[in-house]
Length: 463
Ligand SMILES: Cc1ncc(C[n+]2csc(CCOP(=O)(O)OP(=O)(O)O)c2C)c(N)n1
Ligand SMILES: [Mg+2]
Image (cartoon, rainbow, N blue to C red; front, top):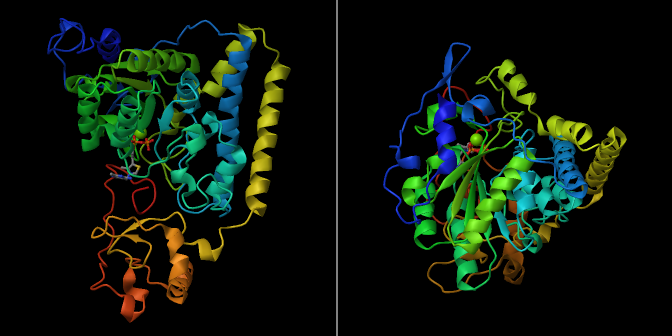
């Protein structure tokens, strides 16, 4: 049943095109609730690609050079993230760590369809995007370790990778936050008269955010050169898609705002690349923003701290049978005549690159204490100091000026550095500051806990 509904979306009408009607694809009314798939006696959303109307795609293999590049990137991401997970368990990496293991075909297929001059924005699950765009594994691993040599100078960590040179604009911890920013970058592309385009990737959960509709509306209205990629791994933390979204066919979710969509097999790197290419062509050449839903699955938990009580091992095993790191190389051997030894050498090389990245991240230094406020902007009021943004002044005060402030700034820096050990656990605000700097009653309200539906996942602050 779901397969039928999804198959119909293949021919989704572009609302910009003449003769389109307010009804859905092929003139059919849009159902807000689709039939559920039953699994093990439970009602669930999409469970297998087949249920989403996706048959194992039969795109012919591209030239060998392309095939090996795609495989190499997917393997690098897989090996990188496996090692990152180990490093997190050994407390070499702090904060949160969200792995995209299982989703590599979606990441690599998307990035491979882009030009180097296009812009990419992602979520907190973005190590793969940085690596696929060409950011060095050393600087990504160093960032995870919080080191100065990291691609965000150790300030961002896992969730805030950034590489302006490769036009990778982050890494966003707030669900749905990158949608309007991506549209803004696309508007800048438009206003500057370039033919650069923007790809904004986000999760199935993010399609429920207000920013989703707001962004789709403006993107369609202003005909922005942007492609929205919904990485539908079928869960928002511990909440399955059929418990968080009334519309299960996410490729249609932006239709009412004027952004047509298409669905692809997120476990097939060639299918993803094919659809993103076409979507980018429409966005770039015809100024018609597009949405692409990639149906995929994450093999690991939401973050590394996830007991995964919301799904069964059988379900995970079922999806692992479609692991792109298994199915794609199998095709390369069986249909492309690639020698197994060639693939093994690529894998071995990826392992070595990752080992080198870990060794580099281990030995490279943390940012020096006196640089604590460099590259940091804080809105005034929350944290007092010269390095804040002050709404009463037209100027933005960059962190570098903290040094000019002398001894007091130094005292603040030292207190900040020691805060983990000496500060109160609750609130993490101004309690500890010297009286002369305390800006009024502290806000000690405990952070709101995230609603994770039927099971908890991730860390205490919602990640
Ligand atoms: C605005 C906002 N609300 C809630 C959270 C807590 N949170 C972090 S990740 C997440 C799930 C998002 O799921 P999805 O968009 O499907 O992305 P995925 O993690 O599956 O890649 C939630 C609710 C947040 N970071 N930001
Ligand atoms: Mg998700």
